[in-house]
Length: 387
Ligand SMILES: [Zn+2]
Image 1 (cartoon, protein in one colour):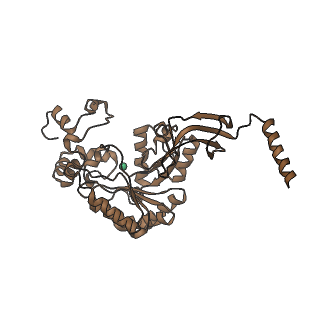
Image 2 (cartoon, helix red, strand yellow):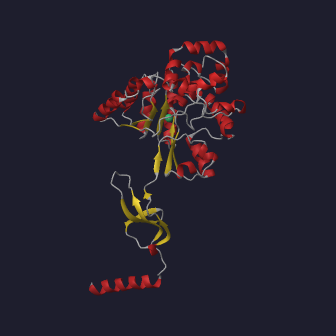
Image 3 (cartoon, helix red, strand yellow):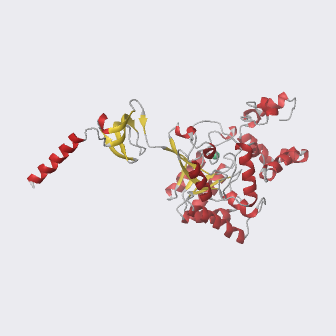
């Protein structure tokens, strides 16, 4: 035994001497401050990577890696997951995804309020038209797997996880009709959720105006299917202002009924009058968690938000394809009706009021001079007393 041990040892010595240049690792990251993402405090160490995996964290000599990265004075951590990106089409327009990578993001979750699939009926037409208009981009898929194929064909620098929008699924089935879905339609909606999940979707992602969802049964039915396939339900609960507690209650109910994990997007309270009043909403979430429901939430670290103009108007005024909405909003009678709708005033207030809402991006060259101006300023420039 002893002799054999010596023989093995000497073979090893010979090997080391014979291949002094052979590196143990493809890459060694030296001397970084490691933040491992588990909540541990950071520590200083080297990381050896081979075959695309971390093989060692500790002290590694400089000669052990084919490539060395000096991370002295820098933090080294696992890639960040961005849960809320809207990069569905941008990653196809520019697969380098530099705006993600340069912030340390290695996984984008896509599909918020609208999703890359399923694309059917009026949804397909409008989706194609919008991507052409916004990005001069041609859509050539209708399903999750079709999108993935396109992504793989073009190449992308980061990982992508896809969620699908239940409201889009309903619209794909019933079109632009503001009514509850019928039994046969719900069956079809569930089928589309199932197909998306089978093709690799990670779950559902919804966005509501004030008050959250209108038809509980539809939400529960679709969420139950996603839950069955291990998915989660992420939601913009509503207008996050005057109706926040009602909206949180509805989100929690989805978890209660279907046992699906829920993630609440950018949990906050909008509307100056409501500042400081997020407490009850947080308490509801804590209470639901204490009952064993899986509910999480996030918030971004800045005080502004960005929305299309349509979010200022009640659902009845913006339910249709873009062209139709523009037509409706140009009609003086519709404008008068909007002004009389209390929801319009609620949404404006929740967005910061006429003094707080800024035209951040204007594509029409005719109106470019309004970029960066508040609605109140625009009204003044136009000599209009009524914003
Ligand atoms: Zn959002």
